[in-house]
Amino acid sequence: MALTAPKRKRKTKRRKKKAAKGRVARGLRLAGFALIGLVLGSVLWAGLYRVAPPPGTLLMLQRKMSGDVIIHPWVPLDEISPHLVTAVIAAEDTRFCIHNGIDLEAIDKALLEKKNGKKLRGASTISQQTAKNAFFWNGGGWVRKGGEAWMTVLIETVWPKRRIMEVYLNIAEWGDGHFGAEAAAQARFGKSARDLTRHEAALLASVLPNPHKWRVDPPGPYVRGRAATIRARMNNVRRDGLDHCVLR
Image (cartoon, rainbow, N blue to C red; front, side):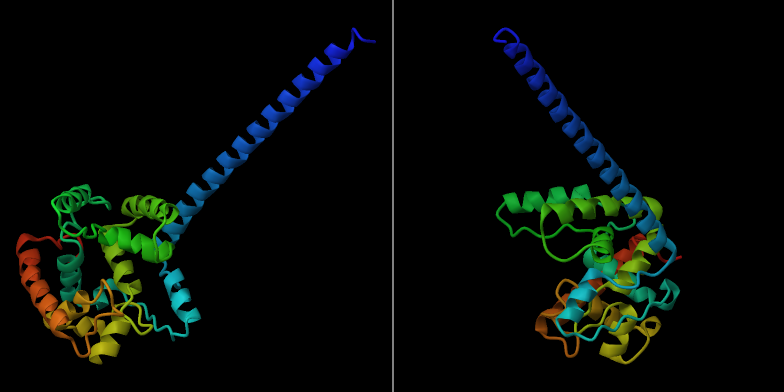
């Protein structure tokens, strides 16, 4: 009996090792299937939004749960003033028609400015903002940022630039529960988004970074100054054709 005990122990150890390897293999297979599911699901989701308006966003849900009445009429890009297109490109992302979603040049420039003692500024593109607004939530965290980067590359691959701009202008937040250019134009100026003037478009673009802090009706000194700067940049955008991928 004493001679056979070590053999049993060795067999038991081998069985345990085999079982552990089996669990690891099953775990890896499940993780692989989950990853494939996430990739395919995100591709289908992006493909759906290429042709269908997003019914809402997580930020809209968050605002609604906070007590806001959500106003979100969808309008085609052709029914939005071209002045607003030029204004948001001038204000948010002058390289929108040039980059492929993530502007590495702008990121390098922002990091260099930070290194030289300046305040770190955002280098988020309109494509990144569209991906975040359409598919994710506000706030930081590497999970959201990683997902945002993936969806940015995906929509830049699946959508034309005009569609990215159309979705962006229809789900951007302009404060007080108003989402999209049409809701903002009606609330702030009592007119349709297609009738926005150059000055009004610059005002709307000027508050996009923080529509809860900065107001259009009436605009304070900061907003007036920022709008004036945007109007000047709009001249450069039009002169250099930096909005050519959206405005035909």
